[in-house]
Each structure stands twice: as structure tokens, then as C-alpha cells.
Length: 472
Image 1 (cartoon, rainbow, N blue to C red):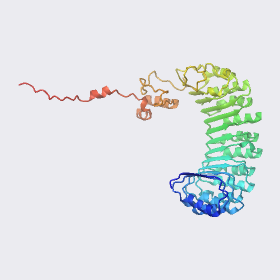
Image 2 (cartoon, helix red, strand yellow):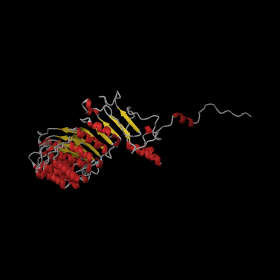
Image 3 (tube, one colour):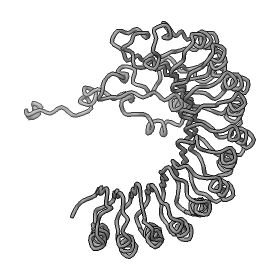
Image 4 (spheres, helix red, strand yellow):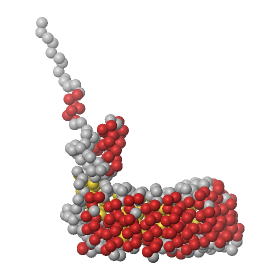
């Protein structure tokens, strides 16, 4: 049997013999690597799965709305089976109600090979079970991706904070965080700042003021490089102020995505602390500034960020943002700006012309539109690539760029991607004599190739007539 993906939902009414045969069949399939199971309440299934777990080939396992029944033995067998699967790297768990599952998982966590763990569900386990769950997560040696979509209690976050220094998680995602209590929010923020390998963090929902204050206090020790704040709402001005200061205090933060409604205190604090922020890539998606003053502060903050090279602008309400951006454009250091006009609903919000007043020697404008007007509704995006005079001085003709046949961004056979950092590196390598590395890293479409006629001239001329003999 060559089945690789198997989905089997609603297994509540299986007999013990049928559950036993199903578990054995799953463990005997040689190519099965993706498995999704629904409700299973028979203990015979879990006992058989535990006995045959070393021979199963499943790599991705999803168990939604899991009901282990009234028997604690079923929860115990399931936890031991998960820790015995040799190829299991991606696990999604739904409702697990019994204490025995978490205690067994904690005892066997050091032998599990999981790399990705997703916890779903709307019920929080008991305080003792939450402690075992947090300890198990911090004891998994290969766990790098963690998603929390379950309402966990205070004991979970307190234990996570205490054991955070030993966790191996690199990517952490928290969805639907509005149920966190103030004490849990404080513990969670301190746990994030203590995780030694955490580089990618995604937060979504409504977090309490205690989270932002604790994040601000510990922001200098956090290791996060990529931060995504989707639909994040700060209810009080104090929380907005703490969030902005925390972002500017993170020493390794290079990529930031902001979404939601930001108060004026956030924009003003971000403007005041913008000179110390380390962000290089900033994406503003569906940002709503409630007042014109907040739009002005945000535009001025963008122009004061010293390391900002890639900027994506989404929805803004007031015209003051664009007027301030135009007035301060000479001080912005961005090499790439993306304006998504589809997120702006009214015609008055769309800028009729975005003028770059930067005294740069060269400006490239690639516009994907039929009419050529940047303010038209058919425009998908406008990309402005600026080579600022503080960053790059390109000669009129680059020796290693094919100026006769430049890359065409509208041709599907030859997609064009402009990388300012790579261009700077290639330019510097040309003048220090490192031409060998430049020849390897330069795309073949940019290297000037010799014409075929020049190659033919180097070949000897073929003739069918014999050479003439010299007369005596």
C-alpha cells in the first residue's frame, strides 16, 4: 500500500477489535507520513499504538478533539506512543483532558523527536497538568517551533518562566491571547526574554498592560530577530508607550511587522526612540492611526530609523502621513519602499504623486501598471529603489553588468530581483580586485557574452579544395 496521507475523522463508534486492527494497520503502512485522526475513545487503540509505535513511519500527526475516555490508561498509552515514534517531527494536539497524559509526556519528553508542536483547544488543563506540560515542552531536545492556541492557566506560564533557560524553541507563535490574566501576562513576557534560542516571535490578540511593562523591563535581554504583531491592540496609553520603548530596546530585532490600531502615545514614543531601533525591514499592514498627530509622528519615526532598508506601507487614514513623509524624505535611508495602494479605500487617501526629494544620483522606478499612473486603481504596487549617496556610488556603466541586454522585469522567463546589498558588495569587490568571487555570484543573465561571430573567427576555415602546388 502506497498511501502517504490518511485522514480519518469521527472514530467514536469503533469496536475494540476494529480499533486494534486500525492501530496495527497504521503502523504497517510503509509510506504513511501524514496522519490525521478524529475522536477515538477506545482504550484498545492506544494500547496497540503504543506496542507498535517503533515501526510507524508517520512524520506529521494531527489529533483534533481527542477524547481519551474515562480510563487514565488510554492517556498513558498515547503519551508513550508519541515518545516512541522514531520519525515523528510535527505534532498537533487538540483536547486532552486527563492528567496522566501530561505526567507521562513530562517523564518521556527527553526521548521524543518532535520539532514542531501545536497545542489547540479551548479548555485549560488542571494546574498540576499545566505544570507537567510546561516542563515537558522545556525538556524536548529537538523542539524548535511552538504554537500555543489554548487557554492555559497561570501555573503553565509560571513554570515556563522558571524553565525558559533550557528550552530549545526558536519560533514561537501565540494566537488568541486575550484570555491571559495579568499575572500570566507578566510571567509570559519574562519567559520570552529568558529563552536563549528564540529568534522568531508572533503575537496575536489582546495582551494586558503587565505584559508590555515586563517586556519593556527585560527587552535588552531578548534574542528575537523577527517579531510579528498581528491585530495587536493596546488598550491604554501606558501599554502603547511600553511597547514602543520595548521595540526600540531589543538589540537583535531586524525584522518587524506591525498590524492593528496604534494610539498616539505609541507613535510619539517610537519617534522619540527611533534613533536607537535596530530594525532593517519594517512592514506596516492594516495600520490605523486614530489622529493626524499620530500619523505625523509615525512618518517622522520612519525617517529617523538609522538601519531601515526595506519598508512596506499599508493602510493609513490621514493625509498628514504622506505630507510629512515627503518633507522628511531626504533623511530616510531606505533602499526599497513598497506602497500597497489596494489597502487604501478612498481616492483622497491615495497620494497623487510620491516625490523622492533624496539627493541620490540614481533612482529606479519599476511600476507594474497598464496606464503608467502611480495613482491609478489598477496599480498593484509601486517599488522605488533609492541608492542613497551615503550608501552607494555606482559608475555610469558597471563593468560586470550587461547594459546592452538589461534584465526585463515584465518577462516571466527572466524575473528581476533587485538586491541593494548584493549590488554594493559586487561593486566593492570590483575595486578591491576580488573578481573571482564576483564572477561566481553574478547572475548569468547580467554577464556580457561574446557574440557567435567572434567565436567563429577563432576557428580555422574549412575548405574542400586541396591546396595549390607551387610551380617549378
